[in-house]
Length: 114
Image (cartoon, rainbow, N blue to C red; front, top):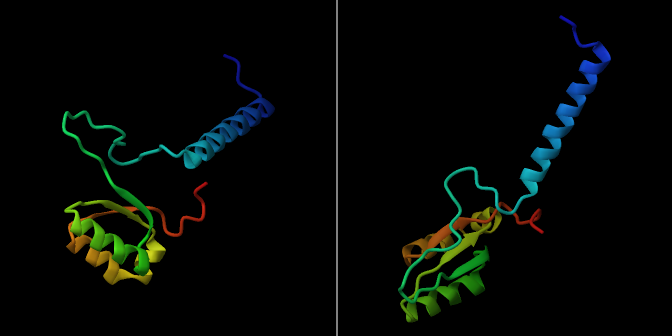
């Protein structure tokens, strides 16, 4: 049985490493990667429904107004908050939850999203 030469082994290892690195980079840049659970893009229903979502908060001026407006209309929403804003305004996040809204993760600072 013939063994693979050292240069060929090194070349195969480098090519494999580059392939793994490139695949990891593409996965990290993907907007639709979901490691836990599944992505929900559509729900089949005959009911006339709409999902309200808000991104990048919570910020006091905007979020307080949204809480009041949504309450006035009996509507619920999902707020995709950044960790940085939530850390700066934890009471506002608590008010959102107390008002019956859901919170979703929208990264720490939103800096990398394009």
